Each structure stands twice: as structure tokens, then as C-alpha cells.
Length: 116
Length: 113
Image (cartoon, rainbow over all chains, first blue to last red; front, side, top):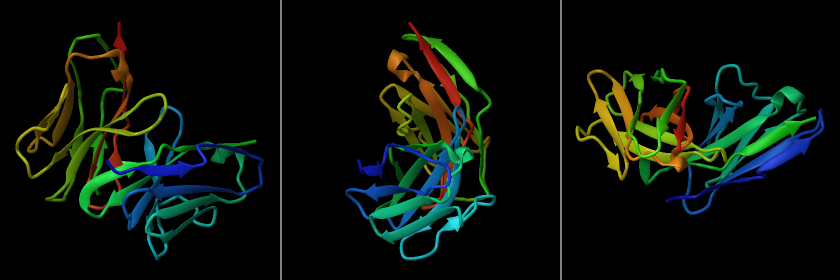
């Protein structure tokens, strides 16, 4: 199956700093990627849909100026958490859709963000 | 808009026994896809099984099978011969083509030796 990677897998940053998380499709081109957030013992919550070459579509309640998404190429989408605060600590997961198989979405391994 | 409901927050099953996880959904789309994902402690989302709504035949993958009742909008997962490695969170999900997955709240399954 197709592979999606995320980097870093775990990051600790200080309050007020920014953190960038990368999501890459390794063996297919993804015109659309999705970013989810997951709190402990909860389900995945969609944050935004990232489309290659255009602006991301954010879900209601997600601050677009705080969670900057860039989908600059068909294999890379980035999520930047700006001016991070402890409440941004969470598990962030990306997924990518394979245009060749419209029903398939492949998940990255996730990034654990801890803001101190 | 689609919604997915999992009404069993936690379940347990004895090793080698069979367990069924429930899922109901609602959608106005005529073409959609249903999924069961497993999330072990590593938190990597693993696809267990998928079902295309236009297919009447229930999907099966080795020990995993679904009971897809389209009229009732029900999509349950049956795990046969449960193994200790099946212990995980299980999420039911749905989408229509290249759209975001909509997840249920999950069911925590514990397989007991």
C-alpha cells in the first residue's frame, strides 16, 4: 500500500515558539491531504483540508492564522503551529488521498506535540 | 453532511472468541465508502476493512468481516478468533470520494487471555 510519512514524530517546544510538521506521500502524488487532531482517548477531529496549489479549507473553530497549512507540492503538506501554547499540545495526524483510488486515504504515523 | 455513531465506548472479549462492534451512519450521498480503522497504542491508524456502498456483498478480510445493512445505515465489524494483538481502539468512518473521513467516537476493545 501507499506510504505517508510525518516528521517529526515527537516534538517538544516552548510556549510562544512555532513548530512545523511535515506530511509526505512517499510513493504517490496527493492532490489532497487532510490534517487531524486527536486528544487522548478521543476520536480524530478534522482540522483542515489541504489542496495542492491552493489555500487550505479550515473546519469551523480552527484558527487559520494559528495553524498555517501549506501544500506546495503534490507530495508535501506542512502544518505550522504558530505561537504555540500548552493547550495546543496534542497528537496531529495527516492523511493523503490517492487520486488513483478515490476511496483510499493513507495515514501518516502522527506527530506528538508537547508545548511547555 | 455525514455522521458516524459508535455506541459502545468499551468492549472486551476472550481470546479466540468472536466480538462484534457496532456502527451506524447517516448520509445524504448516494455514493460513499465505509471503513473500520484500528488504532493500537502506537497511534498509527491501520485500515482494517472497507466497504463500497454500491456493493451488496459484505466485505471480509481474513478474521474481519462486516455486516453492511444499507437500508438501516448500519455497518458492524465482526472479529473472529480474537487475538491479543487485536486490542486497540477501533474507529468506524465514512466518506464520499476524495473528501475528509468522518469518524465515530471509537470503541476500545480489550482482548483478554
